[in-house]
Length: 450
Image 1 (cartoon, rainbow, N blue to C red):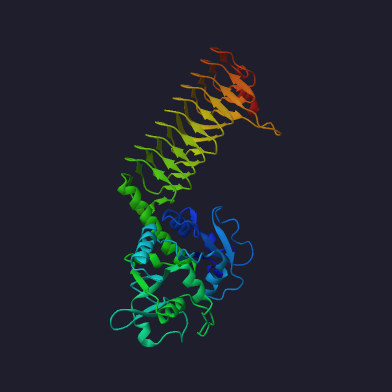
Image 2: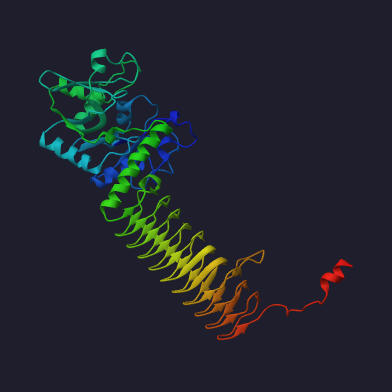
């Protein structure tokens, strides 16, 4: 059960709090992913009324609506129909994203080993302000959890306690359902608090266990953008560490952004000021950066991408791009192909070993292997109404400043003369000269002056 019914007003945003991005994944997806990885049989998200989170929720989760924000116990009660009396329910918060799957698995094991009716995860953070305090008796047994959100909830002695409730629990379903019916709202906020279930169970003689979380980030919640930035820094640190331990060199982690779903092979080097975003994938032995952005891009082994912007494109093994290149969606650089300085490519297939070295635009084109297009090559793919395709064969030598006006086909081993505007097909092995013959006007400067 993931509680996501809060309004998130402190984010001061038209975007729902739990839809805000955290390293390439909405906030709400982090606890969902943790639950899924820990082996949850079913995932239920408690949401507020309306469809604010409709576009955020994955298809494989169930939802329950909490009509009014009346506290965590009330939120869980709103999902009562989804709780099996014979099952074990693990409860998470949607705005606490860094909970680890390993902790959830350990919680399940601890709950079963203790034969507990409920098990609570606690922690001792450096700053416990805002968290419910865990009150124990002299023997260390749990007595209750005291909320501290507003003055009046806790005494001074209780506020001095360092151990806090993380908001992560395991419950036996039947006992939870019965206790939820008894939870009241006699507190400073007039809300129904879920920790009161623990106290009710204890008074009834049930066994309630606790599990200490060693990682303080387990309870790092997000209520505003400052907290989101803090959590993002920790999430990014973990992502970097995971890749570096797997054999990736990140030269300057402080200036490098890598989203959570990105995959990177061994011996790849990520140079400073680079961003690997979305579902980007990089093979082994590649170099990305410096100053390179990948967005859902796929790079094969040994690719070199320097100071370039790559979006939904593919570079196969040994290809190179940049500096200052822009690869747009559906650009494909086959093995060993090169796209150089100030080149833009979109929806085009650049053949193996082909080169588009500099100052060119290649759009809606197929370029054969080992072709070399000179500086200033342009595919004029749009006639004002429709896009058309240019087909350039293998081993073609394109002269500088050539425009290919689509639809047009250039055969294998053909040549184009510098400055040509190619509007007709070029046969294989031919030289296309498509420019006006040069004419020199003698004494032009003298005549112009007169």
